[in-house]
Image 1 (cartoon, rainbow, N blue to C red):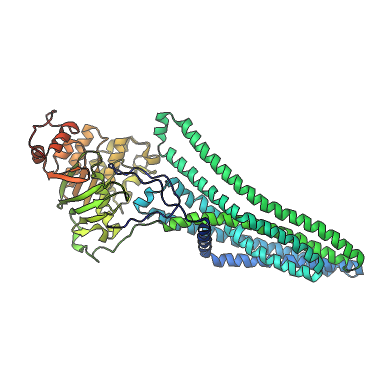
Image 2: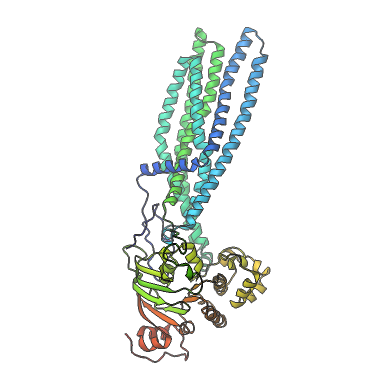
Length: 627
C-alpha cells in the first residue's frame, strides 16, 4: 500500500469536500509538538530565513556597531570639554571632536539603517517566493487539510514579521549587547562603585525579562494563529459571496468574523501585556539607576572620591545605556514574535509536495507516445481519500483504448470523479496502477503528464483577469487564429461581441461576471486550446441550455477523432453517443459496454436511463435482463 503523507502543522478545518461523494478530510490533523520543541524549531527556521541575507545583515550590524562606538566616545569628549572648562584650557578641539563624533555617528547610523532595511526587504521577498513556490506545489491531499486563508496569512502577515525581526530583533540584540558591554567597560574605567550600583539594577531587569519571555512567545504564537483564522474566515465568506447574499446570512457571518477578530484582539492584548511588562521593567531600571547613581555619585563628588567631570561622563553613559537596555528588552519580545512566525512558516516547508518524476522517455514512458490520442487503463485500483475511511475505489479495472469517447455513469458517490483525480495524479492509489499509454502515471514526468491532459472540472473555475487570460491559461504561445477557432467551436462568439472590450474584458473574481454556462464554455475552450491527447470532462455541460449543449457535444465528438475523451455525464444525449460506457457503483466497475448493450444487460443502467437521463422517446426504455 502506498503510504500517505500527513500534514506537519496545526489543526485546521478540512478543505472542500472531496468530489463525487468522497469523504471529507478529518478536521483533527496533527498539532505541533511540545511548546519547547516548537520554539526550538522556530529559532532554527528564523536563523535559516535570515541566513539568506547574512552579508547585508552583517554589514548593517557592523555599521550599527560603529555608530554605537562613536556614540560611546561622546561622553569622553564631553569629559575632556568639562575638564578643560574647569582648568581654563582651550575648548576648541574638544568642541570640534564632539561635533565630528555627533555628525559622523549620525551618518553611520543612517547608512546602517538603509543597509539593514534593504536586507530585511530581501529576506521578506526571498521567504515569500520560497513559500509561494512551496504552496503551489503542495499535494492536493495536503492542501485539502488546511484552510486557504491560513496559508495566505503565513505567506503575508507571518513573513512581514520576519522583516521586522531582521531589523528590530536580531540586529538590535547583537548591537545592543555589544554596545552595552562596551559601555559597561568604559563606565568601569570611570568609577567601579557607580558601576556596581548600575549592574545590580540591570541584573534585576534581566531576570524579570527572562521570566516573561516564554509568555511573550506563547502569546505571539496564539496571535499569529488567530490572524490566520481571520484570513480563513474571510476567504470562506468572500469565496461564496453570492451564496451569503442569497441566504441573507450577512449578519450571521459578520458575527462569526467579529468573534474571530475579538479572539485575535485578546491574544494580541495578551502579548502586549507581557511585552509592556518587560518594557516597564527596563524603564523602571533606568530611572532607579539614574536616581541611585545621582545620589551615590553626588556623595562621592562631595567626598572628593571622583570629580564632577567623571560624574557627568558616567551619567552620560548611563543615559546612553538606558535605551540600549530598553532595546534589549524589546528585542526579546520581537525575537519571540519572529520565532512564532518562523515556526508557522517552517510548517509549510514540512508539508508534502508533489513528486515531479523523471522526464518523458527516461523510465518506462517511451518517447513514441508523445503524439496522438492517449490510452488509459486502471489495473485493480484501490483508493481511499483518508486512512480509516471507506474506500472510494475497490479493485477498479477498465481499459480505454486510444481515441474515441468513453462515458462514466453511476449514482452520486460511485467514484466517477475520483477516476479523473487519479489520472491527473491529484491523488495516488493505495494499490493497483493507473496507466496512461501503458505506463504508471507515477512514473511520468508530472508536468508532461498534465500537459498531455485537458481537464474540465465540475465547477469550471475561472480566474480573475480577462477572458483572454482565462482562455490561454496554461497554453504556450497560442495564435490568434487558434484562439478565434476555439471561441467559435465553443459558441463564445456572442459573449465576446457582447463584452465591452471583447476578449480583453475582465471577468471578475472567479468569473463572477459570467453565467454558469459561460464559465463552462470558457473552461472547455481552454481545454481544447491545449490540444490535449486526453480530454477529461467532468459534468462539463451540466449548466448549458439544449442548443449550446448539442453544439458542444458535436465539438467533443469532433475532438474525439484526434484525442481520447473521458466524460462524466448524466444526460442521455451525451452518454448514448459514447463509444463505450463504464457503469460504476459504490466504487466498483459494474459493467462496460455500449448504450444498447447496457440497456439490454444492466438493470442499474436502465434505472439511471429512466430516472436521471432523458430517453429519446421521453419514456423509460424497455426492461431487459440485468444483474
